[in-house]
Amino acid sequence: MKRDWELIRELLLQIEALETGHHFYPQQVGQHTAESVSYHIHLMCQANLIECSQHHPWNGAPAVSYTHLRAHETRGN
Image (cartoon, rainbow, N blue to C red):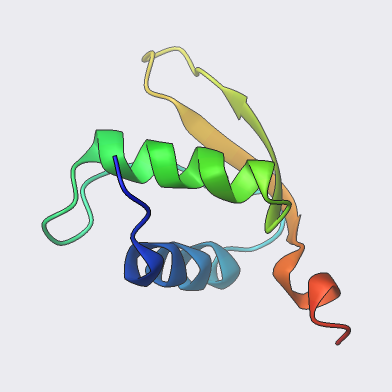
C-alpha cells in the first residue's frame, strides 16, 4: 500500500478537531477504506506525528486514543 499524503493530511485535521483523550475510529474516508485509514494511522504513529495507543473496545473495532498531535512539535511551533 502506498502512502497517500492527502489522506494523512485529512486524518491529521480530523484528529486535531477531536478533544484531547477522545478516540478516533478508523473508518472509510472518501474513497479510502477503513483498512487504508488504519494503515495510515499506523504510519503516523510510527513517524511520531501523533502520540497514540491502539486498543480494541468491546465491539472489536480498532481505535486510536491520542494525547496530542506531535506534528506541531516537529515544526518547532
